[in-house]
Amino acid sequence: MRDYLLTLCVTAAVTYLLTGPVRKFAIATGAMPEIRARDVHREPTPRLGGIAMFFGLCAGLLVAAHLQNLSSVFELSNEPRALLSGAALIWLIGVLDDKFELDALIKLGAQMISAGVMVAQGLTILWLPIPGVGVVSLTPGQGTLLTVALVVLTINAVNFVDGLDGLAAGMVCIAATAFFLYGYRLWYGYTIEAAAPATLFTAILMGMCLGFLPHNMHPARIFMGDSGSMLIGLILAASAISITGQVDPDVLKLFEGSTREATHAALPVFIPLVLPLTIIAIPMADLVLAIVRRTWKGQSPFAADRGHLHHRLLEIGHSHSRAVLIMYFWSALIAFGTLAYSVHSTSMWIVLGVVALSAIGLVLLLMPRFTPRAPRWAESVVPPRYRRRQPAPTAAETAPEPAAAEEERVPVPAGINGATAIGNRARFTDRRKAGTPS
Image 1 (cartoon, rainbow, N blue to C red):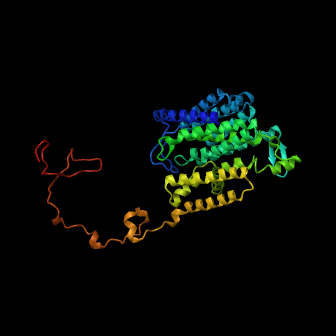
Image 2: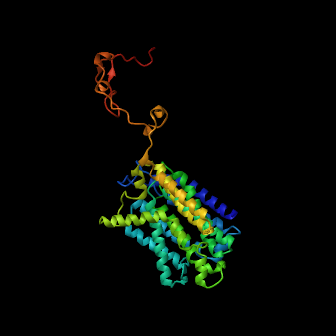
Image 3: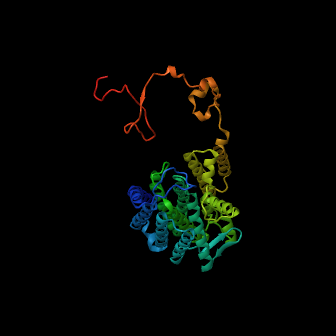
Protein backbone atom coordinates (compact mmCIF):
# COMPACT_ATOMS: atom_id res chain seq x y z
CA MET A 1 0.00 0.00 0.00
CA ARG A 2 2.91 2.36 0.73
CA ASP A 3 4.22 1.96 -2.82
CA TYR A 4 0.79 2.62 -4.29
CA LEU A 5 0.40 5.76 -2.19
CA LEU A 6 3.85 6.96 -3.26
CA THR A 7 2.95 6.41 -6.92
CA LEU A 8 -0.34 8.25 -6.43
CA CYS A 9 1.34 11.23 -4.73
CA VAL A 10 4.06 11.53 -7.39
CA THR A 11 1.44 11.41 -10.16
CA ALA A 12 -0.70 14.03 -8.42
CA ALA A 13 2.27 16.32 -7.76
CA VAL A 14 3.55 16.19 -11.35
CA THR A 15 0.06 16.80 -12.74
CA TYR A 16 -0.57 19.70 -10.35
CA LEU A 17 2.76 21.41 -10.97
CA LEU A 18 2.58 21.08 -14.75
CA THR A 19 -0.99 22.33 -15.11
CA GLY A 20 0.01 25.98 -14.53
CA PRO A 21 2.68 26.07 -17.29
CA VAL A 22 0.33 24.12 -19.57
CA ARG A 23 -2.33 26.79 -19.04
CA LYS A 24 0.09 29.50 -20.14
CA PHE A 25 1.07 27.39 -23.14
CA ALA A 26 -2.59 26.90 -24.11
CA ILE A 27 -3.21 30.66 -23.93
CA ALA A 28 -0.08 31.39 -25.99
CA THR A 29 -1.05 28.90 -28.70
CA GLY A 30 -4.65 30.07 -28.88
CA ALA A 31 -6.22 26.86 -27.53
CA MET A 32 -9.12 28.89 -26.13
CA PRO A 33 -12.22 28.25 -28.24
CA GLU A 34 -15.07 30.74 -28.26
CA ILE A 35 -18.13 30.21 -26.12
CA ARG A 36 -20.54 27.75 -27.74
CA ALA A 37 -24.31 27.54 -27.31
CA ARG A 38 -24.07 24.42 -25.14
CA ASP A 39 -21.28 25.75 -22.88
CA VAL A 40 -21.98 26.71 -19.29
CA HIS A 41 -18.94 28.91 -18.66
CA ARG A 42 -19.12 32.60 -19.52
CA GLU A 43 -15.54 33.39 -20.49
CA PRO A 44 -13.15 31.65 -22.93
CA THR A 45 -11.08 29.17 -20.93
CA PRO A 46 -7.89 27.45 -22.12
CA ARG A 47 -7.92 23.73 -22.78
CA LEU A 48 -5.06 21.22 -23.17
CA GLY A 49 -5.14 20.21 -19.50
CA GLY A 50 -4.66 16.66 -20.73
CA ILE A 51 -1.00 17.48 -21.41
CA ALA A 52 -0.27 17.76 -17.70
CA MET A 53 -2.34 14.64 -16.99
CA PHE A 54 -0.41 12.60 -19.58
CA PHE A 55 2.94 13.57 -18.10
CA GLY A 56 1.54 12.67 -14.70
CA LEU A 57 0.72 9.22 -16.10
CA CYS A 58 4.28 8.84 -17.42
CA ALA A 59 5.74 9.92 -14.08
CA GLY A 60 3.56 7.45 -12.19
CA LEU A 61 4.53 4.53 -14.41
CA LEU A 62 8.21 5.52 -14.20
CA VAL A 63 8.18 5.65 -10.40
CA ALA A 64 6.26 2.37 -10.11
CA ALA A 65 8.74 0.61 -12.38
CA HIS A 66 11.55 1.39 -9.89
CA LEU A 67 9.70 0.40 -6.71
CA GLN A 68 10.51 -2.98 -5.26
CA ASN A 69 6.95 -4.20 -4.74
CA LEU A 70 5.58 -2.86 -8.03
CA SER A 71 8.44 -3.59 -10.43
CA SER A 72 7.16 -7.15 -10.83
CA VAL A 73 4.08 -5.77 -12.58
CA PHE A 74 6.31 -4.60 -15.44
CA GLU A 75 8.34 -7.84 -15.46
CA LEU A 76 5.46 -10.32 -15.44
CA SER A 77 2.95 -8.39 -17.55
CA ASN A 78 3.03 -6.34 -20.71
CA GLU A 79 -0.14 -4.45 -19.76
CA PRO A 80 1.60 -1.25 -18.52
CA ARG A 81 3.37 -0.88 -21.89
CA ALA A 82 0.11 -1.59 -23.70
CA LEU A 83 -1.65 1.07 -21.65
CA LEU A 84 1.07 3.65 -22.30
CA SER A 85 0.99 2.97 -26.05
CA GLY A 86 -2.76 3.35 -26.34
CA ALA A 87 -2.78 6.37 -24.01
CA ALA A 88 -0.09 8.16 -26.03
CA LEU A 89 -2.06 7.73 -29.25
CA ILE A 90 -5.41 8.85 -27.85
CA TRP A 91 -3.73 11.76 -26.04
CA LEU A 92 -2.10 12.98 -29.25
CA ILE A 93 -5.44 12.93 -31.07
CA GLY A 94 -7.02 14.78 -28.15
CA VAL A 95 -4.37 17.51 -28.25
CA LEU A 96 -4.98 18.03 -31.96
CA ASP A 97 -8.73 18.15 -31.35
CA ASP A 98 -8.37 20.74 -28.59
CA LYS A 99 -6.46 22.95 -30.97
CA PHE A 100 -8.05 22.30 -34.38
CA GLU A 101 -11.51 20.77 -33.60
CA LEU A 102 -11.24 17.42 -35.42
CA ASP A 103 -14.25 15.68 -36.91
CA ALA A 104 -16.15 13.28 -34.63
CA LEU A 105 -15.58 10.31 -36.95
CA ILE A 106 -11.83 10.92 -36.90
CA LYS A 107 -11.85 10.80 -33.12
CA LEU A 108 -13.98 7.64 -33.16
CA GLY A 109 -11.49 5.98 -35.49
CA ALA A 110 -8.60 7.03 -33.25
CA GLN A 111 -10.36 5.53 -30.23
CA MET A 112 -10.76 2.22 -32.01
CA ILE A 113 -7.13 2.23 -33.15
CA SER A 114 -5.94 2.97 -29.60
CA ALA A 115 -7.97 0.05 -28.31
CA GLY A 116 -6.50 -2.14 -31.08
CA VAL A 117 -2.97 -1.12 -30.05
CA MET A 118 -3.65 -2.29 -26.50
CA VAL A 119 -5.18 -5.53 -27.73
CA ALA A 120 -2.15 -6.22 -29.93
CA GLN A 121 0.08 -5.98 -26.85
CA GLY A 122 -1.97 -8.32 -24.69
CA LEU A 123 -4.43 -6.04 -22.87
CA THR A 124 -7.63 -7.77 -23.91
CA ILE A 125 -10.53 -9.76 -22.51
CA LEU A 126 -9.73 -13.49 -22.54
CA TRP A 127 -12.78 -14.94 -20.81
CA LEU A 128 -16.00 -13.93 -19.12
CA PRO A 129 -17.45 -15.51 -15.95
CA ILE A 130 -21.19 -15.53 -16.56
CA PRO A 131 -23.60 -16.41 -13.72
CA GLY A 132 -25.39 -19.68 -14.27
CA VAL A 133 -23.13 -20.63 -17.18
CA GLY A 134 -19.57 -20.57 -15.88
CA VAL A 135 -16.34 -19.29 -17.35
CA VAL A 136 -16.74 -18.68 -21.09
CA SER A 137 -13.51 -18.54 -23.09
CA LEU A 138 -13.51 -16.02 -25.92
CA THR A 139 -11.91 -16.39 -29.31
CA PRO A 140 -9.33 -13.75 -30.29
CA GLY A 141 -11.89 -12.09 -32.56
CA GLN A 142 -14.57 -11.99 -29.88
CA GLY A 143 -12.13 -10.69 -27.27
CA THR A 144 -10.92 -7.95 -29.62
CA LEU A 145 -14.42 -6.77 -30.49
CA LEU A 146 -15.53 -6.76 -26.87
CA THR A 147 -12.39 -4.90 -25.76
CA VAL A 148 -12.69 -2.25 -28.47
CA ALA A 149 -16.41 -1.77 -27.69
CA LEU A 150 -15.73 -1.31 -23.97
CA VAL A 151 -12.91 1.18 -24.62
CA VAL A 152 -14.96 3.27 -27.05
CA LEU A 153 -18.03 3.31 -24.78
CA THR A 154 -16.05 4.31 -21.70
CA ILE A 155 -14.09 7.06 -23.49
CA ASN A 156 -17.24 8.63 -24.91
CA ALA A 157 -19.12 8.28 -21.63
CA VAL A 158 -16.41 10.24 -19.81
CA ASN A 159 -16.21 12.72 -22.68
CA PHE A 160 -19.97 13.34 -22.61
CA VAL A 161 -20.05 13.98 -18.87
CA ASP A 162 -17.25 16.54 -19.11
CA GLY A 163 -19.56 19.55 -19.16
CA LEU A 164 -19.14 21.27 -15.78
CA ASP A 165 -16.06 22.45 -13.92
CA GLY A 166 -14.51 19.52 -12.07
CA LEU A 167 -17.26 17.06 -13.00
CA ALA A 168 -15.42 14.53 -15.17
CA ALA A 169 -12.22 14.53 -13.09
CA GLY A 170 -14.15 14.08 -9.85
CA MET A 171 -16.42 11.31 -11.11
CA VAL A 172 -13.51 9.39 -12.63
CA CYS A 173 -11.56 9.81 -9.39
CA ILE A 174 -14.47 8.30 -7.46
CA ALA A 175 -14.65 5.40 -9.93
CA ALA A 176 -10.89 4.88 -9.75
CA THR A 177 -11.00 4.81 -5.94
CA ALA A 178 -13.65 2.08 -5.95
CA PHE A 179 -11.71 0.16 -8.59
CA PHE A 180 -8.49 0.50 -6.58
CA LEU A 181 -10.06 -0.91 -3.42
CA TYR A 182 -11.55 -3.79 -5.38
CA GLY A 183 -8.32 -4.63 -7.21
CA TYR A 184 -6.18 -4.27 -4.09
CA ARG A 185 -8.46 -6.70 -2.25
CA LEU A 186 -8.04 -9.29 -4.98
CA TRP A 187 -4.29 -8.76 -5.24
CA TYR A 188 -3.42 -8.52 -1.54
CA GLY A 189 -6.32 -10.43 0.04
CA TYR A 190 -6.36 -13.37 -2.38
CA THR A 191 -2.75 -13.10 -3.67
CA ILE A 192 -3.92 -12.85 -7.28
CA GLU A 193 -0.99 -11.34 -9.17
CA ALA A 194 -3.14 -10.79 -12.28
CA ALA A 195 -5.03 -8.05 -10.41
CA ALA A 196 -1.85 -6.00 -9.78
CA PRO A 197 -1.83 -4.10 -13.13
CA ALA A 198 -5.42 -2.87 -12.70
CA THR A 199 -4.63 -1.78 -9.13
CA LEU A 200 -1.63 0.20 -10.39
CA PHE A 201 -3.62 1.79 -13.22
CA THR A 202 -6.34 3.00 -10.86
CA ALA A 203 -3.82 4.40 -8.35
CA ILE A 204 -2.20 6.44 -11.13
CA LEU A 205 -5.62 7.53 -12.42
CA MET A 206 -6.55 8.78 -8.95
CA GLY A 207 -3.34 10.81 -8.85
CA MET A 208 -4.00 12.35 -12.27
CA CYS A 209 -7.49 13.47 -11.28
CA LEU A 210 -6.52 14.72 -7.83
CA GLY A 211 -3.63 16.73 -9.25
CA PHE A 212 -5.82 18.36 -11.90
CA LEU A 213 -8.92 19.06 -9.80
CA PRO A 214 -7.56 22.13 -7.90
CA HIS A 215 -7.14 23.91 -11.25
CA ASN A 216 -10.47 22.67 -12.62
CA MET A 217 -12.92 23.32 -9.79
CA HIS A 218 -15.48 26.07 -10.30
CA PRO A 219 -14.56 28.60 -11.54
CA ALA A 220 -12.13 26.59 -13.65
CA ARG A 221 -8.87 28.16 -14.77
CA ILE A 222 -8.25 25.44 -17.36
CA PHE A 223 -10.21 22.59 -18.95
CA MET A 224 -8.83 19.12 -19.54
CA GLY A 225 -10.29 19.10 -23.06
CA ASP A 226 -10.56 15.95 -25.14
CA SER A 227 -6.85 15.34 -24.54
CA GLY A 228 -7.70 14.76 -20.89
CA SER A 229 -11.21 13.29 -21.00
CA MET A 230 -10.37 10.66 -23.60
CA LEU A 231 -7.14 9.84 -21.76
CA ILE A 232 -8.73 9.17 -18.37
CA GLY A 233 -11.59 7.33 -20.08
CA LEU A 234 -9.12 4.99 -21.76
CA ILE A 235 -7.25 4.33 -18.49
CA LEU A 236 -10.54 3.58 -16.72
CA ALA A 237 -11.50 1.17 -19.51
CA ALA A 238 -8.07 -0.49 -19.39
CA SER A 239 -8.50 -1.08 -15.65
CA ALA A 240 -11.90 -2.69 -16.21
CA ILE A 241 -10.56 -4.87 -19.03
CA SER A 242 -7.57 -5.99 -16.98
CA ILE A 243 -9.58 -6.99 -13.94
CA THR A 244 -12.50 -8.42 -15.93
CA GLY A 245 -10.92 -10.49 -18.66
CA GLN A 246 -7.49 -11.26 -17.24
CA VAL A 247 -8.34 -12.60 -13.76
CA ASP A 248 -9.70 -16.14 -13.76
CA PRO A 249 -12.43 -16.60 -11.09
CA ASP A 250 -11.29 -20.20 -10.52
CA VAL A 251 -8.05 -18.99 -8.89
CA LEU A 252 -10.09 -17.70 -5.95
CA LYS A 253 -10.77 -21.30 -4.88
CA LEU A 254 -13.44 -20.23 -2.47
CA PHE A 255 -15.99 -22.88 -3.37
CA GLU A 256 -15.95 -26.49 -4.30
CA GLY A 257 -17.95 -28.17 -6.98
CA SER A 258 -18.32 -27.64 -10.69
CA THR A 259 -17.09 -24.53 -12.48
CA ARG A 260 -20.66 -23.43 -13.06
CA GLU A 261 -21.56 -23.70 -9.37
CA ALA A 262 -18.32 -22.02 -8.28
CA THR A 263 -18.82 -19.07 -10.60
CA HIS A 264 -22.42 -18.58 -9.53
CA ALA A 265 -21.57 -18.84 -5.83
CA ALA A 266 -18.55 -16.53 -6.06
CA LEU A 267 -20.43 -13.79 -7.89
CA PRO A 268 -21.02 -11.57 -4.84
CA VAL A 269 -17.29 -11.73 -4.05
CA PHE A 270 -16.03 -11.43 -7.60
CA ILE A 271 -18.23 -9.24 -9.75
CA PRO A 272 -16.37 -9.09 -13.06
CA LEU A 273 -19.24 -7.75 -15.09
CA VAL A 274 -21.38 -5.72 -12.70
CA LEU A 275 -18.72 -3.64 -10.97
CA PRO A 276 -17.09 -2.06 -14.04
CA LEU A 277 -20.50 -1.16 -15.43
CA THR A 278 -21.87 0.25 -12.19
CA ILE A 279 -18.78 2.39 -11.58
CA ILE A 280 -19.39 4.21 -14.86
CA ALA A 281 -23.17 3.91 -14.58
CA ILE A 282 -23.83 7.68 -14.49
CA PRO A 283 -21.62 8.55 -17.50
CA MET A 284 -22.91 5.52 -19.40
CA ALA A 285 -26.53 6.45 -18.73
CA ASP A 286 -25.81 9.97 -19.97
CA LEU A 287 -24.24 8.51 -23.12
CA VAL A 288 -27.20 6.23 -23.86
CA LEU A 289 -29.74 8.99 -23.23
CA ALA A 290 -27.83 11.38 -25.48
CA ILE A 291 -27.73 8.88 -28.35
CA VAL A 292 -31.45 8.12 -28.02
CA ARG A 293 -32.37 11.80 -27.72
CA ARG A 294 -30.37 12.91 -30.72
CA THR A 295 -31.43 9.98 -32.90
CA TRP A 296 -35.09 10.62 -32.01
CA LYS A 297 -34.71 14.21 -33.20
CA GLY A 298 -33.11 13.08 -36.46
CA GLN A 299 -29.67 14.39 -35.47
CA SER A 300 -26.29 12.75 -35.49
CA PRO A 301 -25.40 10.90 -32.26
CA PHE A 302 -22.28 13.08 -32.12
CA ALA A 303 -24.19 16.37 -32.42
CA ALA A 304 -23.70 18.57 -29.35
CA ASP A 305 -26.67 19.77 -27.30
CA ARG A 306 -27.66 20.93 -23.82
CA GLY A 307 -29.61 17.84 -22.81
CA HIS A 308 -27.01 16.10 -20.64
CA LEU A 309 -27.73 15.23 -17.03
CA HIS A 310 -25.64 18.10 -15.66
CA HIS A 311 -27.47 20.55 -17.94
CA ARG A 312 -30.80 19.33 -16.61
CA LEU A 313 -29.63 19.81 -13.04
CA LEU A 314 -28.86 23.42 -13.85
CA GLU A 315 -32.27 23.86 -15.49
CA ILE A 316 -34.00 22.49 -12.39
CA GLY A 317 -32.45 25.28 -10.38
CA HIS A 318 -29.25 23.88 -8.89
CA SER A 319 -26.17 26.02 -8.79
CA HIS A 320 -23.02 24.96 -10.63
CA SER A 321 -21.28 23.64 -7.52
CA ARG A 322 -24.37 21.87 -6.20
CA ALA A 323 -24.98 20.11 -9.52
CA VAL A 324 -21.40 18.81 -9.48
CA LEU A 325 -21.72 17.60 -5.89
CA ILE A 326 -24.99 15.80 -6.66
CA MET A 327 -23.33 13.96 -9.55
CA TYR A 328 -20.45 13.07 -7.21
CA PHE A 329 -22.94 11.74 -4.66
CA TRP A 330 -24.73 9.43 -7.05
CA SER A 331 -21.50 8.13 -8.58
CA ALA A 332 -20.08 7.34 -5.15
CA LEU A 333 -23.30 5.73 -4.00
CA ILE A 334 -23.48 3.36 -6.96
CA ALA A 335 -19.76 2.53 -7.05
CA PHE A 336 -19.16 2.02 -3.34
CA GLY A 337 -22.55 0.42 -2.80
CA THR A 338 -21.70 -2.26 -5.33
CA LEU A 339 -18.24 -2.60 -3.83
CA ALA A 340 -19.66 -3.09 -0.33
CA TYR A 341 -22.14 -5.66 -1.62
CA SER A 342 -19.33 -7.61 -3.27
CA VAL A 343 -17.58 -7.86 0.11
CA HIS A 344 -20.61 -8.64 2.32
CA SER A 345 -23.42 -9.81 0.10
CA THR A 346 -25.34 -11.38 2.98
CA SER A 347 -25.58 -8.19 5.03
CA MET A 348 -29.00 -6.58 4.86
CA TRP A 349 -27.58 -3.39 6.40
CA ILE A 350 -25.75 -2.63 3.15
CA VAL A 351 -28.96 -2.79 1.15
CA LEU A 352 -30.83 -0.67 3.71
CA GLY A 353 -27.98 1.86 3.76
CA VAL A 354 -28.01 2.17 -0.02
CA VAL A 355 -31.79 2.64 -0.01
CA ALA A 356 -31.59 5.32 2.71
CA LEU A 357 -28.81 7.19 0.90
CA SER A 358 -30.79 6.97 -2.34
CA ALA A 359 -33.75 8.63 -0.62
CA ILE A 360 -31.47 11.41 0.62
CA GLY A 361 -30.10 11.80 -2.90
CA LEU A 362 -33.59 12.18 -4.32
CA VAL A 363 -34.42 14.86 -1.75
CA LEU A 364 -31.25 16.77 -2.66
CA LEU A 365 -32.01 16.33 -6.35
CA LEU A 366 -35.53 17.76 -6.09
CA MET A 367 -34.73 20.46 -3.54
CA PRO A 368 -35.14 23.42 -5.96
CA ARG A 369 -38.68 22.24 -6.72
CA PHE A 370 -39.65 22.65 -3.08
CA THR A 371 -37.88 25.81 -1.98
CA PRO A 372 -38.96 26.49 1.63
CA ARG A 373 -40.14 29.95 2.64
CA ALA A 374 -39.07 31.40 5.95
CA PRO A 375 -41.68 32.99 8.27
CA ARG A 376 -41.94 36.75 8.14
CA TRP A 377 -40.19 37.25 11.49
CA ALA A 378 -37.07 35.44 10.15
CA GLU A 379 -36.89 37.03 6.70
CA SER A 380 -34.20 39.46 7.78
CA VAL A 381 -31.70 36.69 8.58
CA VAL A 382 -32.20 34.28 5.66
CA PRO A 383 -30.99 34.56 2.05
CA PRO A 384 -33.35 36.39 -0.36
CA ARG A 385 -34.38 33.20 -2.18
CA TYR A 386 -36.05 31.92 1.01
CA ARG A 387 -38.06 35.10 1.64
CA ARG A 388 -41.67 35.57 0.74
CA ARG A 389 -42.50 37.74 -2.22
CA GLN A 390 -42.53 41.40 -1.36
CA PRO A 391 -45.71 43.39 -2.29
CA ALA A 392 -45.43 45.42 -5.46
CA PRO A 393 -44.63 49.10 -4.80
CA THR A 394 -47.46 51.63 -5.28
CA ALA A 395 -47.44 54.39 -7.87
CA ALA A 396 -46.73 56.97 -5.17
CA GLU A 397 -43.66 55.06 -4.02
CA THR A 398 -42.27 54.72 -7.52
CA ALA A 399 -42.87 58.37 -8.53
CA PRO A 400 -39.66 60.36 -8.95
CA GLU A 401 -38.89 63.12 -6.49
CA PRO A 402 -39.72 66.67 -7.57
CA ALA A 403 -36.98 68.45 -9.42
CA ALA A 404 -37.17 71.36 -6.96
CA ALA A 405 -36.06 69.07 -4.16
CA GLU A 406 -32.82 68.35 -5.91
CA GLU A 407 -29.77 70.53 -5.62
CA GLU A 408 -29.44 72.97 -8.41
CA ARG A 409 -26.48 72.00 -10.51
CA VAL A 410 -25.68 73.49 -13.85
CA PRO A 411 -24.07 70.79 -16.01
CA VAL A 412 -21.60 71.74 -18.68
CA PRO A 413 -21.32 69.80 -21.93
CA ALA A 414 -19.13 66.71 -21.63
CA GLY A 415 -16.15 67.13 -23.85
CA ILE A 416 -13.18 64.88 -24.43
CA ASN A 417 -12.50 64.58 -20.71
CA GLY A 418 -16.14 64.04 -19.85
CA ALA A 419 -16.61 60.73 -21.69
CA THR A 420 -16.51 57.39 -19.88
CA ALA A 421 -16.63 53.77 -20.97
CA ILE A 422 -20.37 53.73 -20.38
CA GLY A 423 -21.38 57.06 -21.73
CA ASN A 424 -21.04 60.81 -21.32
CA ARG A 425 -20.68 62.06 -17.77
CA ALA A 426 -21.87 65.52 -16.77
CA ARG A 427 -19.37 67.94 -15.38
CA PHE A 428 -20.35 70.66 -12.94
CA THR A 429 -19.23 74.29 -12.82
CA ASP A 430 -18.44 74.22 -9.12
CA ARG A 431 -15.45 71.85 -9.55
CA ARG A 432 -12.38 72.89 -7.61
CA LYS A 433 -8.99 72.85 -9.22
CA ALA A 434 -6.67 70.08 -8.25
CA GLY A 435 -4.50 70.95 -5.33
CA THR A 436 -6.75 73.72 -3.93
CA PRO A 437 -7.76 73.42 -0.31
CA SER A 438 -11.28 72.28 0.37
